[in-house]
Amino acid sequence: MDERNYTSYIVGFISSIALTLTAFFVALRPGAFQLSGNGVFAAILVLAMVQLAVQLVSFLHLGSGEERGPRFLIFAGTIGLVLLIVIGSMWIMNHLNYNMMASPAQMRQYMNAQQGF
Amino acid sequence: MNEIAIEQGRVSDKFVFGFWIYLMTDLIMFSVLFASFAVLRGATFGGPAEHQLYDLANALTETLVLLTSSFTCGLAMLAAYRGKQGQATAWFAATFALGAAFLGLELREFFAFAAAGNTPQASASLSAFFTLVGTHGLHISAGLLWMLVAIAQIRLKGLSPFVVSKLKRLSVFWHFLDIVWIFIFTIVYLMGHML
Image (tube, rainbow over all chains, first blue to last red; front, side, top):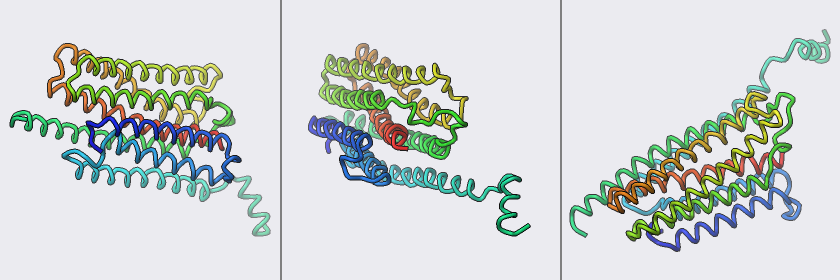
């Protein structure tokens, strides 16, 4: 959308408010939306992603202007890095916890139970 | 439009592109803070869990205030493009007021946490929380300072292409902070509430 256009900002503002309030009520009253625990997490993440897209187009005008090609390319690359950092960290740190050597007391209990020492 | 104006238009677009690259590096910094928050949020060191601390109504008010400030910032830019000095100043002043209100709400929450003994050094979870949300707050403070300078420039120099190009970068910075806050609101507050 053109950056010198009122409609772009008004549409962006109203849909952002609507998306924020929807996410808020989904988190507050998951029962009203027939969602389970993981369903709520997924729903509010999707709502945040939609809001990201709305604000990128209507406030930051990604996709218009002279430098739109390079601007979009470097943005897409950055999102790739962000996903790698966040998902990679969570994956590694959760498994690190799981694979960490147990305390001596836990180790004794494990050996007693599993190996019959 | 004469040739000089076109040339200035190009220069200003190049500046915005350079500033965009800076914002992307800033985004990577925020993503590292989000990652450490996600990893450490359970490490409460026997202290209260997050969802017992957050005031969701406060977080929602902060979000709505910041969203509105993003909108008024856009209106200020539209006035600046149309060369309306008075309107641009007024909308930037409104954006400044809303940004200051946001910062006030955030600091009130921080002080309420600290008053109950939940300081950053109380647990890894709280360290990660204060670092993530506090870094965003620092950006907002820098943006508020920048906005005061911008308003002074509009008053002193008028809406020359040079000043408008600066205003454009300020508005891109402000909209960017709004987007980062949407993810703080979703991941820290809403998800914390459901844990």
